[in-house]
Amino acid sequence: MAQTKIQSVQLSDSGVTPGPYTSANITVDSAGRITAAANGASVPALTATEVAYGSPGNTITSTPDFTYDDGTGTLEVGPTGFDALIEANTGQAIIVSGDTGARFESNSNTFGINSSGALLVNASAGTAGQVLTSAGSSLPPTWSPAGVSAPLNEIVYGTGSGVTSDVDFTFDTTTDTLVVGADANGAITAATGFSITLESNGGINNITLTSAGEINVNGSVGSAGQVLTSAGFGSAATWAAAVNTFSWNTQSVDYSLALSDAENGVAINSASPTDVTVLNDSSVNFPIGTSILVASDNTGTVTLVADTGVNIYVRTGLTLVLYGQYSLVTLIKRAANTWYAAGDLAP
Image (cartoon, rainbow, N blue to C red; front, side, top):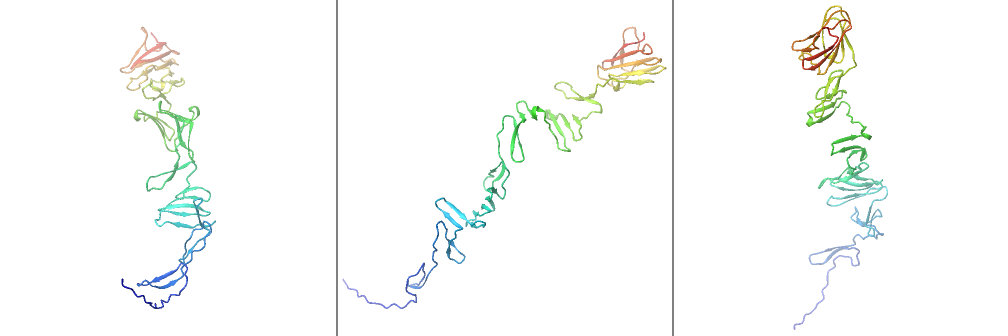
């Protein structure tokens, strides 16, 4: 084996100060020689739970206002009375803390807890009784009324700070019955200027309480003095003449009976002959069963006259002439254009 001779080589001075370096910053040339060396920034001594971070001077530092307790898993940011920020590189999370509370932000949507403990979503703490409701993917949640359960038939309504139900406000789906108020003695009220309409059969028959206080039945408010009259089961109610307190209509000349005479009396006060005419239904249509009294208050002859197409029947042997002064005869409508007369009639 050939022998190798080792010779000593004198290295030139590199200019690097010999000695130990702390957190050394060094420069190495292409031949692998260290051509420069300097002490680097030293890592400060950290108290328990303090987190080290880079300072504006490119040095490493720490503060008691930024700590992490691995025992409790608690990250605390900022001293009392001061807010500090930590932002992730992705922009997905910001934590703000201090006396004003803490918040978590994502893409400009904020979720936080303020200093009083209120839960904030986009700066809103909601109202008492509301719950935080998801709006789905990519949308922030919102505060909304809580869902409630209610006893059978009770209707849920808002109280201004939540929702509730009451035994005095119910709807029975079996009978389609709405009950308002204790013992059904409540009220359904329309706002000023509005009407309430009760409809049946798809709106064919309806009753409307108008803003003017009228009762509109199937498009009609009737006329003064009429009453709402039942037509029986399955038929719509209608406005009809009221059965008024009996009154006398005094006349001194020939007179034709009017609807207002129904269930009342016509008194003829004349010393001359006077006719009382019953008009055809086409002119004045009294309800069947209408009765009218005709009286002679004076000495003039009073005669009942049937209009064209009208029949007035009397007992055999009697005429349509009242017997004389103070005579009284009753006219009763028996059928269409058919009347009976009974009372003090002359033969």
